[in-house]
Length: 450
Image 1: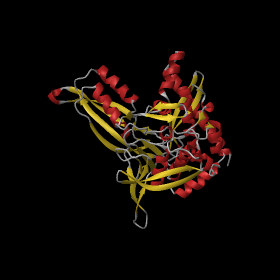
Image 2: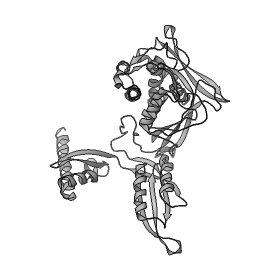
Image 3: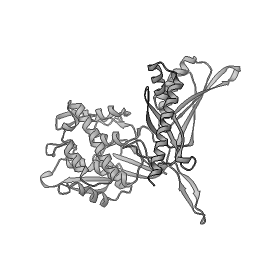
Image 4: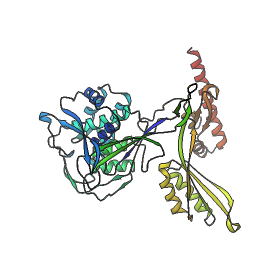
């Protein structure tokens, strides 16, 4: 199974809301406290959780109380008393803390993403950014604590909803700023985040919350198809016209019901692969990935073939996995085409938008199906004319040595063929021969180690 989480953010996202949702979703508070002590900052703050009500709904609110001389105002942006830190200092704190591997890696990535955004806003290198609000101990606890919680829940894929813009102004270290703040806008721009206004003119997305979402989320928009198992509710600090709650949806994808041999009990089983967030590591070298895909279909009999070609390119550019057409006979004996789009469920809206905009269709059918995917690796090989990527699929239980297929990338071969005025087939064959030579050498080396 692939464990999945979806951040539903009707009133935005902040670091303390993420922590509250994770604790509400099952992460032990004591675990977070003990792990965060490894940062060496435990004398500067106290971490507490409390059940609160937001518009009649119960949620968990986290409090990071800075002690004694570190006392701070409630707002993340009231930073006149905050301790500032530069990125290298924060990185050292995290790297020396002996945190779980994924939590350490994700924490570093979140801070580096935030430093890149702040650096772009102020026109300086990321390592020279002097963090005010986000360098304070409460933000470090929020970010590292969130990464610890996601790791504890064994989340493999994280998704996030579109984010509300908020409005008004807020006081920050650089004076009074409009909402969304420049750092938040830059983070959204860097990830092309879908945004909208919910009519609430408050700061709804903080830099800390934006950095967590834009660094760790695999995609933004509607939730993917998955089996929901639990919901964690993290409360924001303000009362708003709608419940100020971040909702963390927890579940699995790629599951199937099977029977245990001998006892007849039903259990769930599935194969999954680590999502494309963090470093994109795989959950198993030869595991199959089972996922849900959406299939969109429409029949067209009154559109130029040139427009069809442009539509296929546009669909692939917005995230379609594959697009193809089939010749069909339609009503009134008109020749037409059946246009089929394969995409992840969260890309349905984007693909439908292309179909409405670029074709004359009056209706689009869609359904969901399960598909199983072989693990894929990209290798690079050197040919006399340049470098070519080779896509390799593996499955040890089927093929000797684990390799089922190896195919040089078409685009790489085509570019070299045009550059050197050589036949495409010659470049393709040279790349395949180079890969086979490397593969046979690897087999020999592995065999000699036993």
